Length: 117
Image (cartoon, rainbow, N blue to C red; front, side):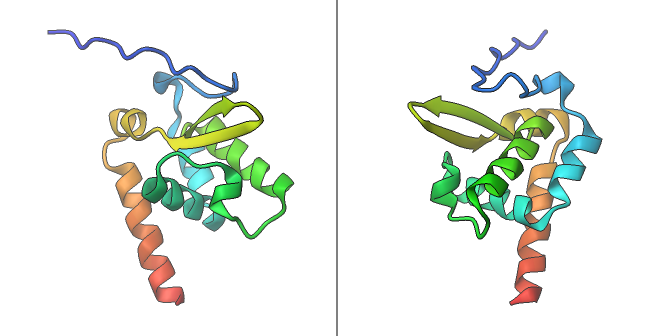
């Protein structure tokens, strides 16, 4: 039995990789930054959010940079509505490509933040 392929994401930006093109090195590199891990945790808790809704402790330009790194690595999907860009986790795609990785990264981030508090 062959699996039915999922439809391609309606990408807001052309630099979002297809599921098969998500590379482990890029995913791990993007998750190495504490702010980006925090952003992933916020998306895991809140679903689809804008960078402004995440209330990041950085400038708008820096927040956009981190959003781009996560998108290009394959962690997030960006949807445009008017002037807003909405980010969401690509949980299904990541779980298909690297089962358990997202949950492991989120658990490790929670543990590290717990030690820092």
